[in-house]
Image (tube, rainbow, N blue to C red):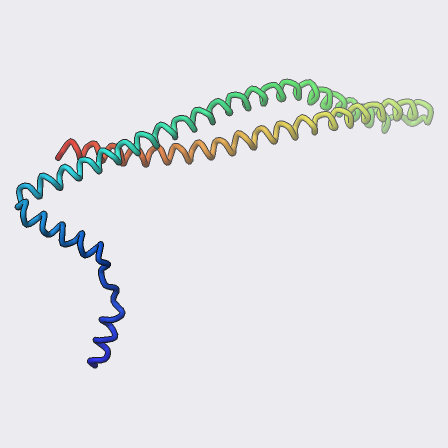
Length: 185
């Protein structure tokens, strides 16, 4: 049993000379200051520490505000691009819709026509309408791909912005608590 105690004592880490000296110095200071001066010194140390934390939080809030402003400016630029693409896409979608309606109308007319000659003419016209529709679709897909990328960038920026809002709220809450605490001291 004595060997267990010896083993435990040898396993517990001992204070380094620096840590031991600092602990003894604090004890000596507290003993010589007395309770009143110790309380004043500790209060001053807490105020200095609190002030340093407030400065760090103010810097963090300023950095967050800068990052938010950059994301807001990016959103404006991306939204302007999105509006331009939507404006360019509108007539293409209208051409596609018109071509689809023309194609559907010609299919019905072709089905009603029994004679081969007029049916071939209608079929050629329908093929031309299909070509117009395909052309509009090809053009539409290019614009939609650009629009998708822009909307994805807006969504990514929105997520970053909301993360910054969370960080800002946390920092502001800490700052308010420190200010209230320093006002009570």
